[in-house]
Image (cartoon, rainbow, N blue to C red; front, side, top):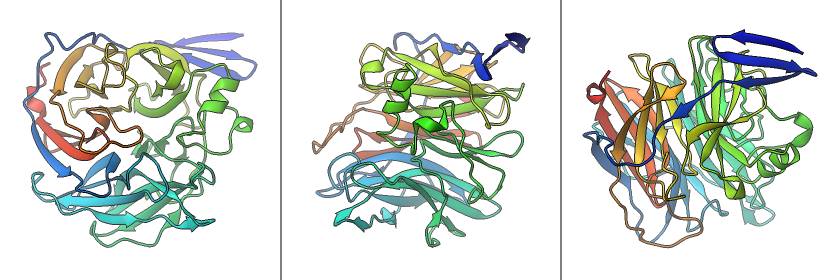
Length: 380
């Protein structure tokens, strides 16, 4: 056994397996005494009498306008017929009507299920990603479409990876792109993000054939782990990647888990539990222009699955996220019931643009809303 201590990370090499432990924690307990940010907000989409399920949103700023995509379902979560739609705005407040980006096809007389999977841009080309599987959550594929104007889109491009991403590609310091999935974290050195994807995972490849909203349970159970899913990562100055993971289902104990990579995402450590609190929802990590790390999510553990309030937590070292702000906590009233519809601030995705943070969320998996706030409110 070889023990190596470097930059606060303990790496143990045992039978060729790498275990990494970098303690990442927060100090959020309740909303009492936590300051509220001054925000602006705009409702992008609220359904009428059709297309009642709306979730998995992402936002980007591309060629003088904001563009968002999300999953748009007929009534229930991830049911056959679910499509991916997009909308745009030049001023944040006024948004175009939702238009289909990708529509499902029939397989054995049943429509497939499409899931919005993030946005990316490179040298004037916008890439929108979406996942697809058959109604029994099999035959998982990741697709992309490209656009020069955010309005006219290419034919689908097969990414040749069997997953539904949690977040779209994000660039690390080396220029490599990494996709956050549930337990698959594909990477490519193609700066366009449309070819050369290679799979990586903390799990042995003998345990899986695909990664989607149902496929993460079995391999975790075989390894004695809780159901780990929906990762988001950040990279510290020592070049280590820290991928935090949600735990859901019966395994939820109110804590995020962690896997790390010290080789630009080619291999990942065995996941470990962290003290970082979580409400059982998606979250997003990133870095501010002033180099502080941030988390946007739902750290409350007292009201499981309420997904409220939406919180920003900051860290100067990527270890202790101890500076908290309430982004939003206003309630949204569900209009139409549907399978698994709920959660006040669902599945946040963030971008930083011209001194503001933009946060897009779903509201009870029914409406899509975007928030923003001036970063100058964040004290040092």
